[in-house]
Length: 636
Image: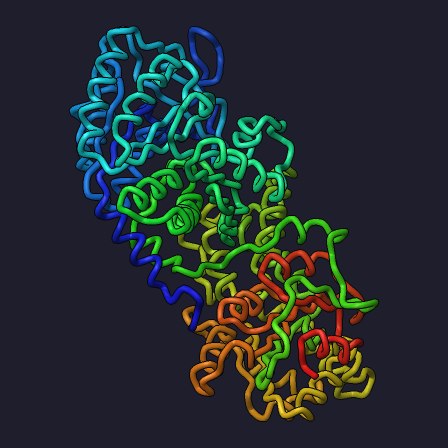
């Protein structure tokens, strides 16, 4: 599929990262995951308290250690660790784990009993993390330790392309006195890029590139926000610009699921967040981001590409649960240079910001280029034209809940039942529009995750799809029977004005295509029953039972390839994120249909938010204002 990037920027960014020599100074820590068995039948003889038994234990690098692990995973040319560890069991484990990654530990100094190796111990009961137990929270480097570390940093910086300055523990290595000495080293090595990731003391660094989250940026810009208070994009942009002007360096501001901003003295650019369907764990995502930024900049890359790579790498990391994960080059390439971005989340969440075409109900999200020579139009089916499958979510939900709870469905306590139900509902909302096999493949993982069903009884994605499809087709079949008997008309299952829009586009010589995640045979049958299959002249494309074949993607790519089209000749109408995202990527005009499938006219606010996040250019509730829709599209 054509895109504005063609993938070249990603290959170049990864190549630059591979050339970088990076030093990391900071709070080297270990993350300890203790997976506790829920059985509490044994009590301590001495205390009479329940014994918590650790079934499995897992240790990974945390703090500056996780930054190093991410650099190693990216495949940078060389990584050197500079810092302090204790003369304890965890200090030895730390050094071994780093050396196993090929990291130079000559600058990682063991400081005896005066320093505890920082450890973040995380007991986990099921998928719930309990209260942490931390080691090293009272460390404070004496003057001799500071001098020894500074000497190691000065030596390492002489041959480094980038130095990451990590400060995570308030009482850790980076005291105000140490930071002043670090500033002197940075000033003495102008060729080397110094990148700061500091939770508490970023304002003390001079001449360095800052990597901050939105709340840290607000504090440094003199407008602190409570941690539970949202920092809007407009405010984050102001903070990034202010800090870039103040420091004279690039500033990177991460915004969690909403992506990140990169600013310099001249401009600020927003890199949108990336859609992640799976469960996420944000732990370590910031370490992944700063590692990618340092690697690209150290290899001679520009801040924009560094930010884009950091964004993709972090989206890999958050998919890795109960671990401080990393992102390797192949995992990053699997996401791709033009991922599924989440656009304009603030607008999506706040309908008060909406702008409409004249006095119509058509919302202009992104002003279309005008005029457009639309020659090909793709229509999604369910929810965009047809309501035959209205209520499919209500069919899928109990099927998934039954599948996950299995033999425990009847006797599961209220907490477990609602935990499963809430996760199923969130999942269905996220995956609306994707083919059913993709949803069922994820269901298999949910069944495994909750552990209520014996491993041997878990079905594969085709088995679960059969269960769901059987229930769904009972509902659809009943509606089709009423059509055949004349009890209901085709119009009773069409979004308002849909047939008229199809006929008008065809009258104008536009070729029409029908695309759906519904199985091909069922899609063709339903389009015929509703009386508009002939308008598509055989161009009807549904799922073919292969999870690797995304019907809507195949249609879009096929149209562009077969007809040699540019984006300005293509429009897509859909109520789901898949077709909207694909159209946005290929430069076509994406018209979101935020339909109320029960009334068959009027807006659905949930769909509106979803479609904006997917990248819709225009949003209409239905096709009742077809002429205004076409005019707003730039079709005269």
